[in-house]
Length: 138
Image (cartoon, rainbow, N blue to C red; front, side, top):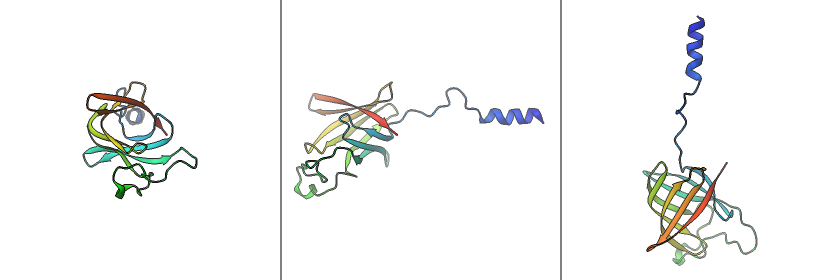
Protein backbone atom coordinates (compact mmCIF):
# COMPACT_ATOMS: atom_id res chain seq x y z
CA UNK A 1 0.00 0.00 0.00
CA UNK A 2 2.77 2.44 0.94
CA UNK A 3 4.72 1.52 -2.19
CA UNK A 4 1.69 2.23 -4.33
CA UNK A 5 1.21 5.61 -2.64
CA UNK A 6 4.89 6.54 -3.11
CA UNK A 7 4.75 5.45 -6.77
CA UNK A 8 1.63 7.58 -7.32
CA UNK A 9 3.28 10.61 -5.70
CA UNK A 10 6.37 10.22 -7.88
CA UNK A 11 4.19 10.49 -10.96
CA UNK A 12 3.17 13.97 -9.82
CA UNK A 13 6.77 15.23 -9.51
CA UNK A 14 7.99 16.87 -12.73
CA UNK A 15 11.04 15.26 -14.25
CA UNK A 16 14.16 17.27 -15.16
CA UNK A 17 13.96 18.37 -18.77
CA UNK A 18 10.16 18.09 -18.79
CA UNK A 19 9.74 21.88 -18.78
CA UNK A 20 7.68 23.44 -21.53
CA UNK A 21 9.57 24.40 -24.66
CA UNK A 22 10.24 28.13 -25.03
CA UNK A 23 7.71 29.93 -27.18
CA UNK A 24 7.20 33.33 -28.77
CA UNK A 25 3.52 33.05 -27.91
CA UNK A 26 2.35 35.45 -25.25
CA UNK A 27 2.16 39.11 -24.37
CA UNK A 28 5.18 41.31 -25.17
CA UNK A 29 6.09 44.87 -24.19
CA UNK A 30 7.57 46.74 -27.15
CA UNK A 31 11.07 48.22 -26.88
CA UNK A 32 9.76 51.75 -26.41
CA UNK A 33 7.28 50.65 -23.72
CA UNK A 34 4.35 52.16 -25.61
CA UNK A 35 2.36 49.02 -26.46
CA UNK A 36 1.67 45.41 -25.58
CA UNK A 37 1.57 42.95 -28.47
CA UNK A 38 -0.01 39.51 -28.16
CA UNK A 39 1.74 36.89 -30.32
CA UNK A 40 -0.25 33.76 -31.09
CA UNK A 41 -0.78 31.15 -33.78
CA UNK A 42 -2.75 32.26 -36.83
CA UNK A 43 -3.41 28.94 -38.52
CA UNK A 44 -0.01 27.38 -39.18
CA UNK A 45 1.85 30.69 -38.82
CA UNK A 46 2.49 33.12 -35.96
CA UNK A 47 1.15 36.65 -35.85
CA UNK A 48 0.92 39.51 -33.39
CA UNK A 49 -1.75 42.09 -32.64
CA UNK A 50 -1.65 45.20 -30.50
CA UNK A 51 -3.38 44.19 -27.27
CA UNK A 52 -3.05 47.50 -25.46
CA UNK A 53 -1.64 50.97 -26.07
CA UNK A 54 0.31 52.24 -23.05
CA UNK A 55 1.29 55.59 -24.56
CA UNK A 56 -0.99 58.41 -23.48
CA UNK A 57 -1.53 61.97 -24.50
CA UNK A 58 -3.46 64.05 -27.00
CA UNK A 59 -1.17 63.15 -29.93
CA UNK A 60 -1.53 59.37 -29.58
CA UNK A 61 -3.71 58.19 -32.46
CA UNK A 62 -6.49 55.70 -31.79
CA UNK A 63 -6.59 54.60 -35.42
CA UNK A 64 -4.09 53.58 -38.10
CA UNK A 65 -3.75 57.17 -39.36
CA UNK A 66 -0.32 56.66 -40.96
CA UNK A 67 -1.34 53.74 -43.17
CA UNK A 68 -0.47 54.43 -46.83
CA UNK A 69 -3.89 53.02 -47.82
CA UNK A 70 -6.51 55.71 -47.02
CA UNK A 71 -9.20 53.02 -46.66
CA UNK A 72 -7.30 51.51 -43.71
CA UNK A 73 -6.68 54.71 -41.75
CA UNK A 74 -9.83 54.30 -39.64
CA UNK A 75 -8.83 50.86 -38.31
CA UNK A 76 -8.45 50.90 -34.50
CA UNK A 77 -4.88 50.58 -33.21
CA UNK A 78 -5.94 48.10 -30.52
CA UNK A 79 -6.38 44.79 -32.29
CA UNK A 80 -4.27 45.88 -35.26
CA UNK A 81 -2.14 43.06 -36.67
CA UNK A 82 1.49 44.23 -36.62
CA UNK A 83 3.23 40.84 -37.06
CA UNK A 84 2.17 38.27 -39.65
CA UNK A 85 3.26 35.19 -41.56
CA UNK A 86 6.05 33.85 -39.33
CA UNK A 87 7.02 30.18 -39.58
CA UNK A 88 9.65 28.03 -37.88
CA UNK A 89 10.24 27.95 -34.18
CA UNK A 90 10.56 27.34 -31.39
CA UNK A 91 13.48 29.78 -30.97
CA UNK A 92 13.55 31.47 -34.37
CA UNK A 93 10.67 32.46 -36.61
CA UNK A 94 11.28 33.76 -40.15
CA UNK A 95 9.44 34.73 -43.32
CA UNK A 96 7.17 37.25 -41.64
CA UNK A 97 6.20 40.86 -41.97
CA UNK A 98 6.23 43.57 -39.32
CA UNK A 99 4.02 46.62 -39.69
CA UNK A 100 4.93 49.85 -37.91
CA UNK A 101 1.80 51.94 -37.34
CA UNK A 102 3.94 54.97 -36.38
CA UNK A 103 5.37 55.18 -39.91
CA UNK A 104 2.81 53.17 -41.87
CA UNK A 105 5.64 51.01 -43.21
CA UNK A 106 5.96 47.22 -43.43
CA UNK A 107 9.22 45.29 -43.23
CA UNK A 108 10.41 41.76 -43.90
CA UNK A 109 10.92 40.44 -40.42
CA UNK A 110 12.13 37.63 -38.18
CA UNK A 111 11.70 36.85 -34.49
CA UNK A 112 14.25 35.24 -32.19
CA UNK A 113 13.94 34.27 -28.54
CA UNK A 114 17.02 35.42 -26.63
CA UNK A 115 18.62 33.37 -23.85
CA UNK A 116 17.39 35.90 -21.28
CA UNK A 117 13.76 35.34 -22.33
CA UNK A 118 13.43 38.57 -24.30
CA UNK A 119 12.42 38.65 -27.97
CA UNK A 120 14.51 40.14 -30.76
CA UNK A 121 12.26 41.55 -33.48
CA UNK A 122 14.24 42.32 -36.63
CA UNK A 123 12.88 44.24 -39.59
CA UNK A 124 14.68 44.62 -42.91
CA UNK A 125 14.47 46.80 -46.00
CA UNK A 126 16.67 45.38 -48.76
CA UNK A 127 19.93 44.62 -46.93
CA UNK A 128 19.51 47.08 -44.06
CA UNK A 129 18.12 45.48 -40.90
CA UNK A 130 17.29 46.87 -37.47
CA UNK A 131 16.47 44.89 -34.33
CA UNK A 132 14.39 45.79 -31.30
CA UNK A 133 14.28 43.97 -27.94
CA UNK A 134 10.83 43.21 -26.56
CA UNK A 135 10.27 41.86 -23.05
CA UNK A 136 7.67 39.36 -21.96
CA UNK A 137 4.78 40.81 -20.00
CA UNK A 138 2.61 38.88 -17.58
